[in-house]
Image (cartoon, rainbow, N blue to C red; front, side, top):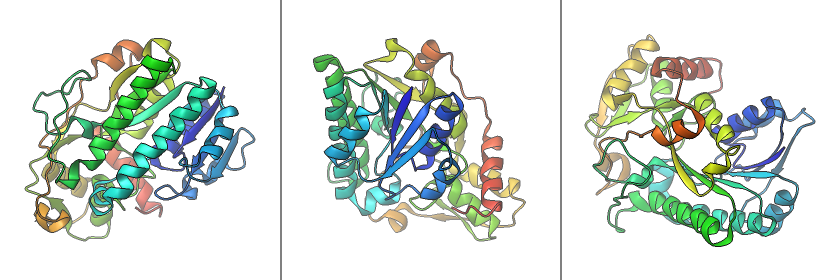
Length: 323
């Protein structure tokens, strides 16, 4: 099989390329390197079953040509990270919606199956935990830029499902919950790479808010197993799936865990949200996925523990890859 991965030089995309190649497939990566890095795919460049194009998936002609050469498309290209969302809401909305429009339109012309990467952010402030795919989405006011990313990804989901229902284009949507591992950058506010970088440097580990907010972290190697597998099941077409882990930890406890595993003496400091992101920033207290649906189709569940995740990120940064 021939796979196209938009955003394939990014953190998750590059690991997905590794996984698909390991399964004997051919992979072509499309990435404009706005948040991805050529270093993420440098180890793949000598392979005859791997190709890449440096361009934007907002370009219909580029996408059309690569779709023609592919059997399945993974659309991972997106504006990512809380800091980027807060600082560049126009870029966030336009990148997410326009790229998805182009990919779905060009894929539909040739009826090529498309995977759309979404996010747990779409659940917003819903109190209905654990989050189920058919549950209500509860977003904040449009005056709160925090919700621009969630809203744009929800539009992506609506569009993908509409293409399936109206035009019979095979689409699958997955909502990813805090995927972590080697190659992830802390540049755009990703918490574990930043905590690890600060701990290794002996700098204060900065926890935003009061540190009581809780998250579940899933190793990227587990995630790409699910991503690679889900497109092999036709019963997944037109469906939305949660992909993540169920082990919760507060940000304050996470900072302590990182410090311990890094054998660091960094102090832990709290930074109010208003100072980090500006007045009026909103966050969700908890995010837990219900994994019943993905488990029923794939028999999938995450295998790696939080400590294994932290150790892999620590090893990656100690090796000089940085964050």
